[in-house]
Length: 360
Image 1 (tube, rainbow, N blue to C red):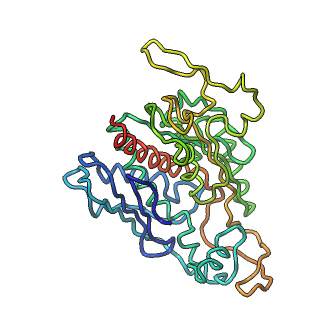
Image 2 (image 1 turned 60 degrees about the horizontal axis):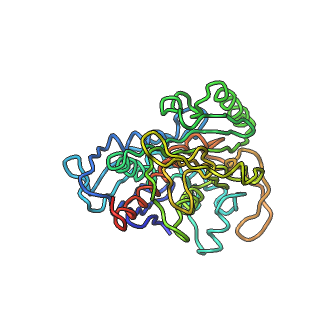
Image 3 (image 1 turned 180 degrees about the vertical axis):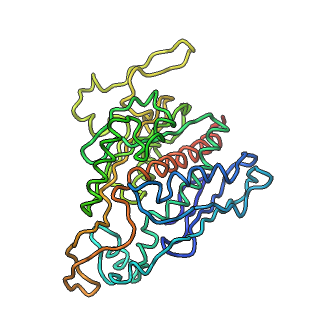
C-alpha cells in the first residue's frame, strides 16, 4: 500500500528517477499555520549532497504546496505537496538493468508484479521518503500547535561506534552540530571517520537512530491491535533499509529481572502520576502513560556498494554486478528526519483518534 494512517492519512507517490515525488495529506485539521519554508527546513535535512558522507545526487528538493493551504493556514482539505526530481540519471542503471542487485527489491518486485522500475529501484528507493518527510513536517506542526509535543531524533550508533546520549537533555542544536547528527562530538568524529573509511573501500555501514517524543499526554493509543508501539513499529519498519525496532528497554530488557524492569509509579509535585524509570518507553498496554516516548530503529548497511558482487540476471544466469550511481555509504544520518517524520505521523493520527473518541 502507498497510504498510511487513519484520520491523518498520507499517500506518497513517485519514483526515484521519475519526474517528481510527493505526498497527499488528508485529514489535517484546519487553521494550522504552515509555510513552505517550514516544510523545506525538514526536507533540507533529508536531501542528498549535504556532505561527503552521503549521496552526491544534486537535488534541491524544493517543495511546492499545490492545494489545501490558503493564506498561510491549512484548510482542512487534502494537501498536495510536490518535489521535482532535478538530477535524475536513469542511464547510470542501464548497464545492469537485467541484474538482481543483492539485498535490493529488484527480484521481489519482479516476482510479485512481473514488471519493475529498474531506474534506481523506483518506489523501493529511499527517494520515496521525500513525501513522508514533507507530511511529517506538517504533522510536527499540528502536534506542536495543539499539544506542545516535541519530536527529536539523532544517530546513536554507526557500525560498532555507539554514543551514550541522555534523552532528557539532548537538543536539536546538538544533533545538527555535525553532518553525522550525533550529539556527542567526540563519538561523532569517530563515526565520520568510519563512514569515510568504508566509502573509500567501496563498502557501506549501518547504524541506529534513536528518537524521542516529549510532552505526549497520557491516553493516546488503543488496546489490542492498534497499540501505539505496534503502529510505531509498522511505521519505522516501513522505512527503506530498516531491520529492527525497539521501544524503551527493547531487547536489552530480556537480561533484566521483573523487579528491575517494572516502572514504579509516584505522584510528582504538580500532582501528576509519573514513573520513576522508563523501561516501558512511554507506552503501557498500547497507550501512552505521559512519559518520554523512546524508540530505536536499526538500519542495515547500504545495499549498493562499489565492489564486484555475484548475482544472477532475470533469466537466472550467473552474473557479476559492477554498481554505478550515487549512493550513501551510510544512510543513517539522512534517516534521522525520516524517523522523526514517521513518529510524528503516528502520534498525530492517534491524537486525533483519541480526541474523536474521548475528547481532549
